[in-house]
Image (cartoon, rainbow, N blue to C red; front, top):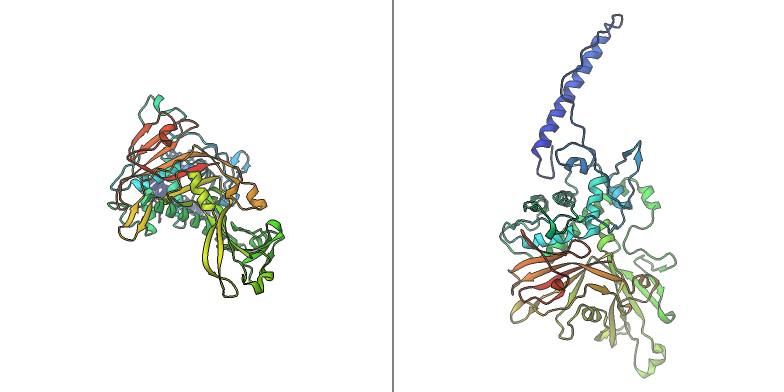
Length: 496
């Protein structure tokens, strides 16, 4: 049997024993059928009950497979919006594509008992990302929902998803604060299942001995799970084309019902502020709607304003207005430039992101150089907002260098209306408040080396610091927000 995960010896043994038992049962049934044709007129003698051990029940879902001891019983399903129906009191398990399409974001979760991850050789970049995703409640709830409600199937189409499900199973639920635990924490372990899934996808081939970038790894891991989910959903839609065509658009950027599409269907005309027409185009209409995009997915709108001819002869044709065009761009995280000397806080960094940029010498439709204006604004923000601080910059003389400047970040981030576009969709996200839940730090001065650690919010007020196998308690959130001499914040994770 081709497993996409390292085989469990106990499961394999029970699997082959059960297969041999079923084969013997079929042979006995065939033999009984052939002999019964000659003995219909003779009374049947009841045989004594067999003393053979009853076969182990078949595993019906991930929870049954992974449950300690392999009993095959089903744990209660996690509370999610993707309701699991019940028949005669038994959980009715979904197919994977049904669970993915029906799942919606859930925030509440029981705190996990912390557990360290072994660094087998420059693997700290993976450890901090795995720990940060584990303590991101919507992401954890998504994996738990799949584990509890979907009938398992060992295949190679979703290796990253399967590896992450096994990874979260290594952690126990425990509400007790770390300082009050009377027993020792579970032993640190190596997330070999995740390593194996990455090897199969030919990414980070060495996996040991070479320092990698934490943001690059997080990008690959999250995008990889998204692509696996999208392929499962797409495959099901291809099997049911009529049903798929009847459903609404499954893209992140769906066109408004009353919008006017252009000829090739790649954009539409919107009425913007002061009744000005704005042509809007989606840069990636193929982005599928998966649990990953529902957790991390937002949208930016880049608007370009280009003046018409500005000479006196044609000044009346311009009328003081510049025609606009917009590109709507989906994102899973925001990569923020922090190199400017005028930015010292996250709010100032977002101010600079939303500031208009003047492009001198831009050629308009009449072939004349003009000063065009480009502006990038938020249109939709996700439940989990990931901010990547671009600390590694290229210098012409010195190559790639690290920016050590301290960027102040708040515990509660309020999104200012000036960072958003002026439309109905963006209005729902203005003034949203986000709470800090994870900070990933980079130690060192160079891009090719250093070390990664992270601070994570375990419960409403308990912050922990993870350094591979070492786990410590922080006295308060102030320890997270304060400037540190030996490390700089690299990735910030906020939840709504």
